[in-house]
Image (cartoon, rainbow, N blue to C red; front, side, top):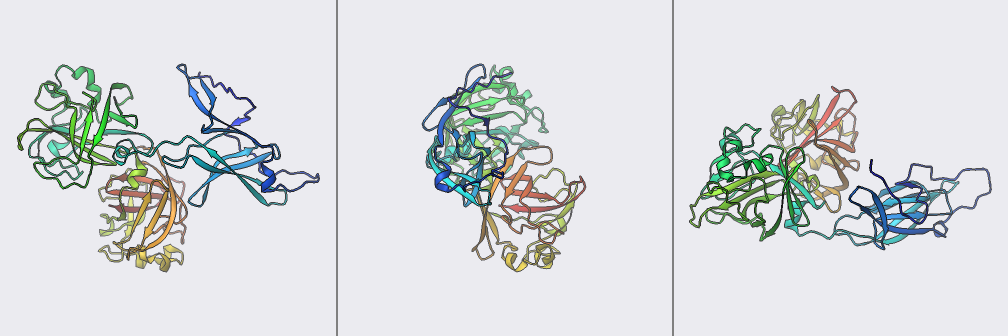
Amino acid sequence: MKKILLTLGIAAGVLFTSCDPLMDKGSFDYENMTAESLLNGATFAQFNQVTDDQGNVSYVPSETGNYIQYNIPNVSAVNIFYEKNGERKQLSYGRAGGMFYFLPSRGSDPKQTLYFAYINQDGQEVVASRDFTLDVAQALDPSVKILVSNKGHKKWKWMPTSTNGGAVWGNGGGMGEQDGSANISGAWWGCGVNDGDCPDKFSGQTNHAGSRYEEIKGQCDLLSYMVFDEDGSITTYSPDGTEITKGTFSIKDYDNNKVINETTHSRGTLETSEGAILWPFAINTGGTQPTSFQIGYLDTSRMILIYKNGADDGAECTWWSFMSDDDPEALLASHDWHWKPTSTNEGAVWGNGGGMGAQDGTGVINGAWWGCGVNDGDCNDKFSGQTNHAGGKYAEFESECYSQSYMTFNEDEATVTVYGKDGNQVRQGSFSVDWNPTGTRMGTLNTSEGAIMWPFAINTEGRMPTEFEIGYLGGDALILIYKNGTDDGAECTWWSFGK
């Protein structure tokens, strides 16, 4: 078992403190605390956390440390929080002595204001504030951020394509514009992962790997992956998380909106050390491992790399197909989200269902019973006929019931903004994502009440949920699900959005 060593000067109480009351109670005479007196005599110290080779954790004093030790002697309990977009974000709730951790979002001002709240016996809340200077990760170059996410590290794995029934790597020529779909423009042939459906697999193409196939065959399964890190490193892993190789990368001249033609394949250049990416071999070269790749396509969830084997415009090329589902906040913020018609009721975008299993974003809602569509669409039932679900608020929300209506997510501000059919802002709320992909759900979208478009749970007379299961999130589809009850077969509400 790993030891935790607290090398601190004063008793820290409980790390990330417990939920004790915030009010002192008793029959004794009591003078109400004020915001000015709350922090009188309070002490604060900042630390960085350090882990040694044996896994032992200690805390080292630092003037900008993100672990903040506090002792507020005038009261028995405080609530510690910061504010973002006008909302309180809790850091600690309970005792008036202990330690909490606060890491501001990437690129924030290192000087941050934290608040300390206490409730007097008469129920009055008093709030005092104090500024702290903290370590904050620097804002990333936009092109690097796409590769490594706002977290500073990001997984990329194979994405099967339409070439040869699921190929992820292969050859082609005259490779024109790539649109990020499963179609590889200019592809001639390709092979797929060893555990996939493509008729040709990596295991049958060892001649392209020189003598290295046995060394890196762990890279050749569907769930093999590589991690791009903000320190400029790429590490490849087998599906069980075993490290296989480690290399470096840099990105140059990236612009995913460049006009591409048959002679200009590139939206930028990805440069790496030799052998850094998954299956790093140029086709038909006996094991050549390129170090400079043309970026055929790159956004938060999709990457297509191209290596041109020769100088001629029609020369044979090698292509690689990757995807990432490890950066949900950036993917949500990557474009506007409009209503996406589905096959349910010939175009429904919102409706009910039960036993709703895994969703694939193709326009078929697994488990749907019924649904309605936008007011200017072809669905048999439209929002305009479902006003009972809006709890008397239809007129307020009517503008977001059209194909032109949309919502946007801002990753840095953690906001959701809804726009009506005329393009004018209707309202703004907040969001966060708990990302935990399973066989049926990709995670949870948490929002303030009424943040998304048409935010009503079906058959609840206007209930606006604040917690949605993410049935699917990809470049062109977002499916949200709200379960009205606890039973597995309970009625659910679903929403379908697209790019």
